[in-house]
Amino acid sequence: SMMENYGQISFVLIRESTLGVLDESSFFGSDYSEVSTLTLQKCDIAEISATAFKSLLRLEKLSLNDNHLKEFSKETLSHLPELKWLDLSFNQLETLPVDLLGEVPDLERIDLSYNKDLKLEEEFFANTKLERISLQDIRLKEVPSKLLSYATKVHLIGLNQNEITSIKTHAFLGLPNLTEIELASNEISEIQEGAFEGLLKLKNLDLRNNKL
View 1 (cartoon, helix red, strand yellow):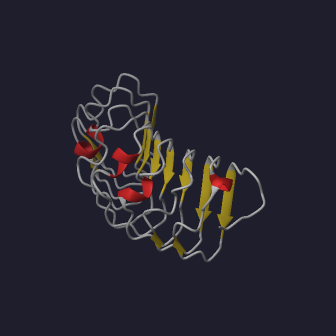
View 2 (cartoon, one colour; view 1 turned 90 degrees about the horizontal axis):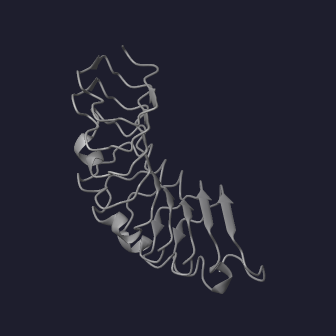
């Protein structure tokens, strides 16, 4: 175990370390049973075993940003029933299991930004309660309308710093709770008629640094 004799811990932050691999021994034992936030940033993590977070049953926020993850198995989340926030930004993820989020039914926020080669299957957000989705700088050429249409409870969608050139008609159809869309720093030169149709709750639309 990484820490001993500390009693009950609720917050763990490790930054700029060389953990490399996370396995069952990384956070083992009752010391970690009350941890609600775990942040492992810039820790050279390239591999996570399916049981690495087995003792973290109360975890609500997991941040693994700025590591070297190329894959992430659904088993890794299977021990985290209370997870509400997952940050996998700034890794090297190319794909994720289509049923990954089925393991964390109460997840509200996910950040997959800056995984430059990430491709998600269309049903990835199906049956989720997600309120905030960040997909910044993952080389999107257009708004992933079909992918997003499954996230029916989403409030905020972050699509900054992609390569989107046009907002097509009905680009955000089926998202009645959407209040904020971030589309700054793309290549947008066209917004088609009806692009934002049906978004009765939309309050903030960020289109800065485009070609409009």
